[in-house]
Image (cartoon, rainbow, N blue to C red; front, side):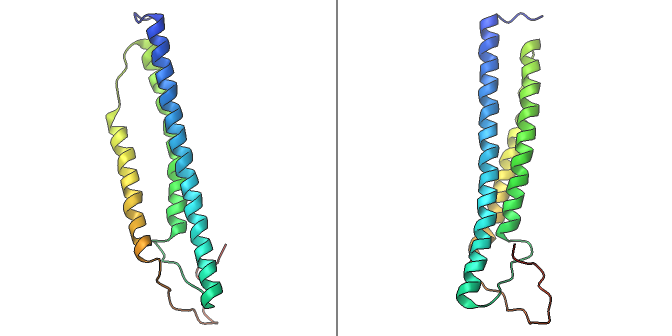
Length: 144
């Protein structure tokens, strides 16, 4: 089937599994960070309401909930990518024609940079309280 010695193929498969597990740890971290960021933003809004008695309205785009949800979704896609990449490399090792996929490293790095840049406005807007809504105005986004 191939010309690679059995021990070398075994090492390559073990390296492929270690790489898969590293991607899996990364995706679990992304999901965990996303969940923590989303819940911590909710906690801060509730704390602000308790202290000021004003209902803070989150920014429609730059909110910790949006960033947290995006990180969870990105973590799920990372798991899907990890399984696909593991299977692809597995068969390439078996056939003896491994080809690295550098573009995916750039895509993943770009996404992490994107989320980092997206979180910067959250740091600058952390102390800003939006105007209190009137009693007859509907709440655009309810506390969860």
